[in-house]
View 1 (cartoon, rainbow, N blue to C red):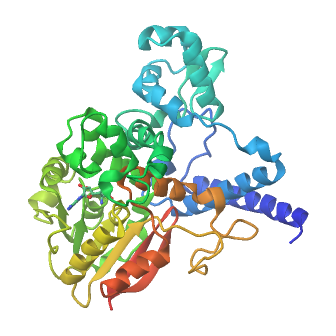
View 2 (tube, rainbow, N blue to C red):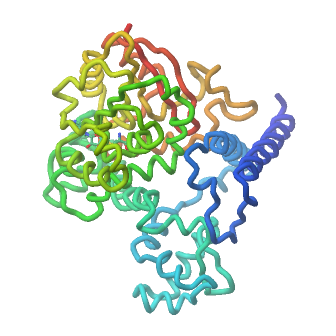
View 3 (cartoon, helix red, strand yellow):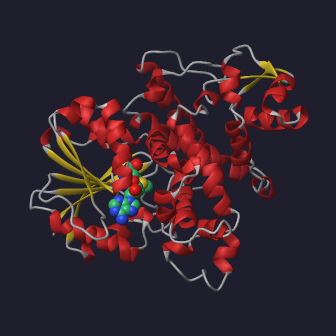
Length: 438
Ligand SMILES: C[S@@+](CC[C@H](N)C(=O)[O-])C[C@H]1O[C@@H](n2cnc3c(N)ncnc32)[C@H](O)[C@@H]1O
């Protein structure tokens, strides 16, 4: 393909994918929002946003590929301060303050409230507004918009964003040192992850999960709410519409957290019986959340909370579906194999295991390319349209010394414990890899 033909192909993809996204907003019954919109759109909180996510995957990929191709090469290596600016906005509650000022508030007044010098604060907010988060209504007057409204503490996606800026980014700051220090460079032990280098200075040892279960720092109490946020950021609940749950009676949610997946599942399919397995401290938190949000499932005994260490014990036997969302990617191969072997032991011939993760696409060696065929001339892995996948991979390195795996790596893990691939579900930003007994 000649360069010009390729560029025309990218332009055509931008056009078609943007129109597909617009059609999704239309279908949801309201005008397409603009950056000036101050209300959320019904599609923002829809359970199933898979079609929109797929359109955005192409749109983001094509826009970035086009810019990277046409811009002078040195132009593309810019500094990126988004995380730092978002952290300032969240920690100083800018969105919450602006909620009382729908027409905007002068940065000098904001400065008096948050005790950040107004000239510096305006630069942070202007940088975010330039990316579409907040509006600078007139010079120095900032107001909320649909994007900034996500940065409220009551919104789980905000909690997740905060944890990323607060914790993951502090680990990221020592990534180079961790990759080159003799003691950590060749290790895949969770206790030698970059974040633990930072925490060691606070006198903390062990792994991230050791720290989390014993931690009293406010942000870690929010970890499990943050996991609900991960689901909303990635549109994970589309699996409720796209997997045949009506044919299922029993589900084991292994490493369930406080129920980001199984609580909405129980609400949508009230006849299911769900067993939540996690560490005891986490299930104590889960029971409070379920009692508040899904009391009918609790009183109807549709959900059971059974503490279980998945590295040591076999989960509840013979369930129709074993669901592992964001579990395997937290662990290096040795531990991941132990978890899967335990699941394998619990499975009956009819059981299915769904591993719900982000499977890494390798640029030139795409296995299963027929499943995830990026339209040409996009990079075969959708380029920037799949960027979160590669960022999540680095987050797993930084927090757990673990990783997102390629599909063939996940399949190999399954193969090693007697599981056979049944199907790969393309769910936009993540996939569900379905296994049965080999
Ligand atoms: C990344 S979170 C995923 C939570 C949930 N599945 C989700 O998708 O949001 C990992 C979960 O694994 C749990 N976990 C960690 N170590 C565990 C262990 N040894 N046994 C059981 N659960 C564990 C954590 O408490 C946490 O809830």
